[in-house]
Image (cartoon, rainbow, N blue to C red):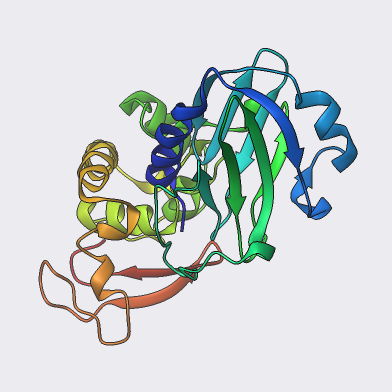
Length: 258
């Protein structure tokens, strides 16, 4: 599923279209258009030049010389640029690319195209999205900022780390890996962590993001292969515990995560 790392791969691929002009907008699925009407997209975007790409958490932003176009990918959305996808297949999604899964597209001049294929329709496209609704990007969060985010909440630490309004970009796979490496139980209250645990959590956020970016994505963590019935902790061999925390399936080690 696309988390911060996957969206960064998408952003890098989208850099190819910087300098091109939007010739036509294709929006065959009106439900996929958020915060406005589908017939507003063409007049708003066509004729504008793409100036740069950005990413905040899981939100990919295309800045034009007019409006900003925000692209969200949900669990199964894949970006396709000039006929090629930077990620061939997502976890929990089909590797096929059926025409009916193309939810949105830009035809570009002098050549090329950008589109989103999303089988489960969990993503969306929005003009001038409210970027202030997102918290600090996980790649940029400081120890002081993380400590403040955790101290203000009694929610489970996993839920707090996945709250995009406070820390943007971390999803289910990344957070399970981070907490497993930090030795912190995902159900611990956020404001119950001591100074040392917060420091280790901050260290692991940045280590995991850097390491898994090099490996190839959010699904390449050490814990990931064991996320199943009878899965074992790669650290101490304990049978992993499966719970639902914050509405998400959660895997953790009952022995070393406290």
